[in-house]
Amino acid sequence: MRVYERQREVRVVSATGTEVCARALLAERSLQRLRGLLGRSALPPGAGLLLRPCASVHTLFLHHPIDVVFLDSGAGVLRIVPALRPWRAAAERGARSVLELPAGSCERVGIVVGDRLCAEVADPLGQLLEQRPRDRRATLDERAERPDRE
Image 1 (tube, rainbow, N blue to C red):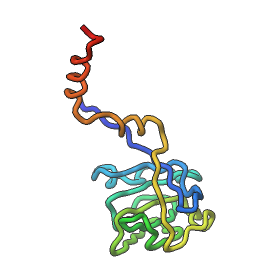
Image 2 (image 1 turned 90 degrees about the vertical axis):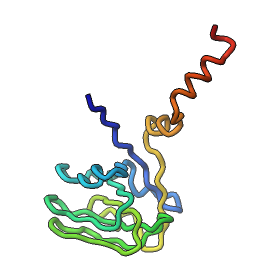
Image 3 (image 1 turned 30 degrees about the vertical axis):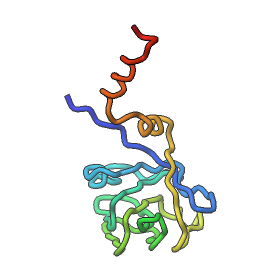
């Protein structure tokens, strides 16, 4: 039996605290990045997809335009491609991640080249997963050493 981990969501805000995207799916694995937005309907307002690492995107097989924000390693905005239409591609040299948003989001929020963005964990489950110890055996050993358990 194969168990699939739920794709995490993040909240993307600018350095000034302005919310850019309330719920962006985080695509850090190759299959998640490969799938991207394929097979999904148009993004609702406040939704998005954060691809990392990534320096180029395409809109093949999509049926709706998207805003594309290319980010450097420090989450600085390198380039914005507003309303990238279906069956197009975009790339940026030096980009380390890409944020895909519904068309018109960048203009509505006021994102400009040079802004800094920050991704925060959006759901409590994601916070619990990040705080969980990596080595489960160590946790079990610690429980066995507790004097209250005999």
